[in-house]
View 1 (cartoon, rainbow, N blue to C red):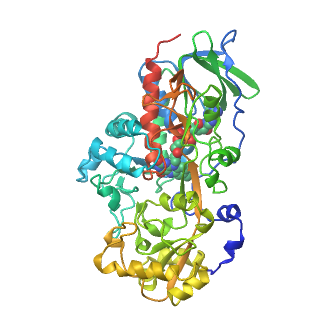
View 2: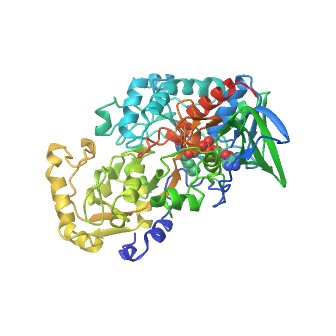
View 3: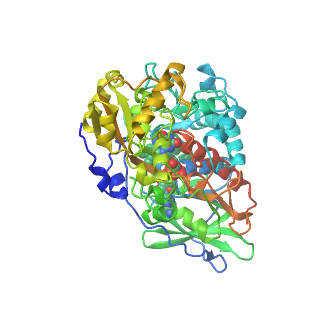
Length: 540
Ligand SMILES: Cc1cc2nc3c(=O)[nH]c(=O)nc-3n(C[C@H](O)[C@H](O)[C@H](O)COP(=O)(O)OP(=O)(O)OC[C@H]3O[C@@H](n4cnc5c(N)ncnc54)[C@H](O)[C@@H]3O)c2cc1C
C-alpha cells in the first residue's frame, strides 16, 4: 500500500489519465486503436448524377453488435444487404466486451432460476434507474422486446447461456453462471418500484478458453450473418458520406473509402448507421462529453464518431451526448463477481469534504459518474472508500493483495485519517459518527443503502482507498424513434431512408447506466428493429 496526498497537486486530467485500468475481467481484452479522425461533417453528396459502383436494398455501416443484428434482420426479411466494415474483421467493441447482455422481461433463463419478471416490471426498473434523459417510449420498447431478443439470441443466432445463477454478496459467487445481476435491481430505491430480479446474461468466450467475453455472442452472430445468402460484407471499407436524393427527399446511399478508391453505393431502401460511439475521438469527447475527458477510453479505433458525424451532416438531432458509462478503482471492492454490492460496500465513500455522496451498494458506474459529473468535481477527484479493520479482515486474499498495490491511507483513528486525507475540518468525523449512529437500526437515512451492508466503522486501523475513474465509453448519439429512424434536428421528423442503432444512436441509456449488459442489449434490440424497418421500406 502507498500513502499519498500529493494527488491534490496534480491536475484533474493528469490524475484520471494516470489511474489504473481496474475492471477485473476486461483488463486483458484488446483496447485496440487510438484516437482517429472522424469524417469532417461534410454535407451529404447529391444523388443526382451519381455513377453507382454497387446497388443494394439496405446498406449497414459498421459490423458490430448493432450492425450484425440489423444485417441479419434485413437479410432474413429478403432484402439484399451490403455491410461496410472499417476494420479487417467484424466485431468492434461488441466482440471484445465483457460478455454481459441485459435479458429481462421474463425469459426461460430467468424462469429456470425461479425469477418472476415481466416487461412491465423491467420497464419500471428502467424508468426509475436510468435517471434524467431516459426516453420512456424507448424504455417501453426495450423492455417489451427483451424476451424476444433472448429467444432470438438462443434460437436463431445460437448463443449459449450456461445454467445457474451468480448470487449476490455475501453468498459464494458462481463465475460460470449464465444469469447474473450487474445493475441496481436490488438497490432499495429500485426494489421499491420494481420487483428485484436477476436480468443480466453472461456468456463464455469463444476466443479465450476459460474466459468470458463478447465473442460468446458476437461470433455466433457473425456466423449467422455470413450464412445469409443476400448479405455481402465489405471489409476495410469505411462509410464516409451519406448520399441524399433532393428530388425524392431521402437518403439514397453512401460514399465509402476502400483503399484509394471512393465507392458510391446505392441503398434502394435505406442506410443503417451502426458505427459505434465516439470514445476514441478526443475532440468529440472534449466538445460533447467534457466531464469524461482524460478518462481511459474503452473500445476500438472504430469508436471515432464517424456515424454520428454523418448523421449530423444530414441534419440529424443528437441526444444525451454529454453522458457516458464510466467506472472507478472502487469496482474491485464494491462488487462481487460483477454484481453490485461487494465486501467493501460495507464501508463508506466520501469526497474531499469528508461527506458521503453515493450509496456504496450502487451499480459501480454510479460512483465514477457522480464523481465526474458533480458540480464540484475538483472535490470528488479523488474520492475515498473508507473501511475498518474488521471489514479488511473479511476480504479474500486476492483483494488484500490488490489493496497492497493501491493508494490506501491507513490511520489509527478517524481524526488521524481525516488529517491525512485533508478533508474539511470535523466533517469526516461527523459523517462517520452519524453513519454509525444508525447502524443498530440497520438504516441509511442519507443514501438508502441495503441493511446487509450497514456495519459500524469502528475498529482501528481505518483505511481510505483512493477512488478515481478508470475507464469510459460514450452513450450519446443520433436521436432515433422507436422504429430506429433517425430524427431531424430541425423538424423532429424522421429523415427518410436513414436508420441507426447501437452506440451510434441514443436509446434507453441516459444519466445513469442501467447495469452492465445494457449497451449490448440496446444494440441487439434496436439493431433488429432498424434492420426490420429498413427492409420494409419501398425500394427506389
Ligand atoms: C472492454 C469493453 C467491455 C465492455 N463490456 C460490456 C459488457 O459486458 N456489456 C455491455 O453491454 N457493454 C459492454 N461494453 C460496451 C459495449 O461493448 C459497446 O457499447 C457495444 O458493443 C457497442 O456496439 P455497437 O454495435 O454500437 O458498436 P461496435 O460493436 O463497436 O461496432 C461498430 C463497428 O463499426 C465499425 N465502424 C466504425 N466506423 C465505421 C465506418 N465509418 N464505416 C464502416 N465501419 C465503421 C467499427 O470498426 C466496428 O466494427 C464494453 C465495452 C468495452 C470496450
